[in-house]
Length: 390
Image: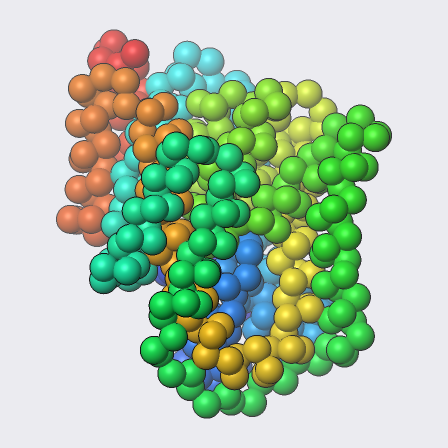
């Protein structure tokens, strides 16, 4: 399981949707480790749970193969390459001096193109039709008018409620056999632990005053409260990390843009944040704390949900809820595209021109994201040297 996941972690470029295609090719078509219908239902389940959906699908297949140990092996293989690369980038960025200013700004501009492309792609798939478009528009308006983590949760709940009320027409496919070697008692304990940590970690951070406990609390809440994963975690992490002064916004967005250049899950961006924070813990220790904390909710939820999955997937209402959450996520991502991504990156006409070129490379030329990121970073250094940007 680890070797198969490591192969995917080294080669899976393109973001969460592309990762699911890679997983299908490797685990369903080539290896036959999971049946087609079970894979489709598993994707729907992981999209309904908070956390990084593509990583959760890989972890769930690992649990199907070899229990909890298999889930850990799958996560480690898929996540380790991107986490190591993005942590190394964070450590190197501190010593780049004047070049670093142009490099960071170039990465910020590329982020505009990457997130814009993601918005368009998700809107085509998740916000097609009048009802879904209305849900997406309402979510966008709410996040722009009242930007906060609570608003994000409210938007997701709004989408889920709208889906449950108005999207019940789709029929649920007949359930197929999917065995997970996890006991029911273990599942219940895992769900209880998920809820207890969500409630007790903020209290522990407040009482202890320890920076490490506060980090665990912030990243755990990010992993536990974000739906859609990947790009959608951006606004929540920005408020939890930049808000307390642990990092400035430009360095935050530079790391987010750099995360597009590496294979594997976008949640590895948390390793960059942990390594780049002001004060201690930071560096490799901070990266490990942030990475483990943001993924822990996913493990606990999957351990709790998978043994009950056979009952959950029989209900048509669950399919309707997933259908409503999709367009709400589109609205969240569109809001993140405007602020903080666009407002922080586009300062001069040359910035907008570079963002347009990056978008054309991604959408028109179909250039790989890593190549677009490298090109944008180099152009940012050149523009800074020529005085074309502020």
